[in-house]
Length: 387
Image 1: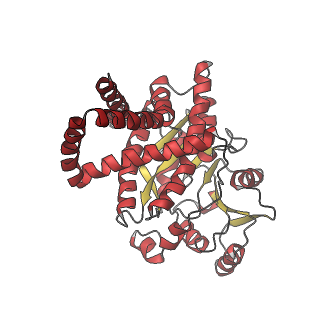
Image 2 (image 1 turned 120 degrees about the vertical axis):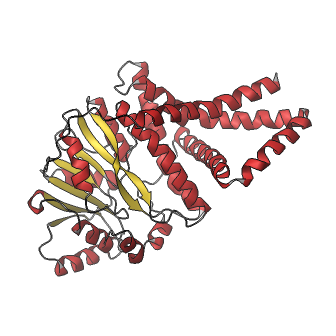
Image 3 (image 1 turned 45 degrees about the vertical axis):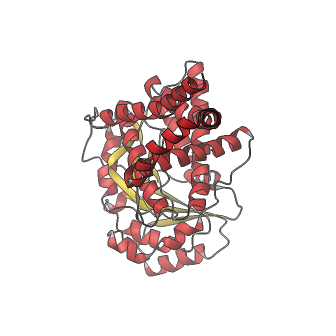
């Protein structure tokens, strides 16, 4: 019975995400069923949330200054949430040297938190499209020209972009994250072509203004995307557009960053589960059920699988020997080693996030991983033609 249980657990733990990935990979290759107007040029407001970003804000403004879009239809709002460093001084210096830049500053003297500060700044903006972009994320100059035409379709309420790493070969941690990004984002594209994805990131998240009254207070960009979908609009990840950012090269910092992201997604999929049970979830079941399973059930399966494995290997040492003989050759191949490590560590991260979610332990949404800022240099950005 132990052996049978072990094989069932392994099959479910690996099989469900593998089948879902293959299904969405197939969907991602299909054409869009959208009415896209390539000449669509709505007015745009770019909101950049800031809290102690003195190391990045000048580079961010230089990057935004390169964006190709009609000048009369674009404005930038720097949303400063009570920074205690030289963020405002850096902004002032930039504006002095670039007096014609169409940049506004919303300066909150009270530390409100990212979402609350953005919501207050949103009230003063009248643009057709609102775009959120974090200070440590950088755009190719043509990103708006490629992204905004998708919003011309009346069924689409929001679009986001792929995350591209500036330091993909920095360490085994960043190489693993590059693999994770390529894998996960390919199935988010499949979800988008099926209906919608709610996995939105702060590097580039564009929303039709008339649909959103405020940004989601609990789950940030992804929560806002879910709210838009629940209003019968689609939320899409567009494969042709991407934003660049650095990623921590140290594993501990990766865990800090990803636990926060994982908890937000678990909160969202728990909400989706409740909506699903009441028959009110707009996201199709073919997307919702696998995602709920992957974020809320699969991490627990890893624990059960670990416990059953210990019992089985103690009872039947021959299976331990066979397992090690089968595992060792796969670990010698970098690609399979990366796959195994990413599966295990990402489920570990989900498990830690799930524990904090269940215990209601608060995670600071504004806490930044400073390593990512330290790794960011002008040379890296110029190499990618982002400055």
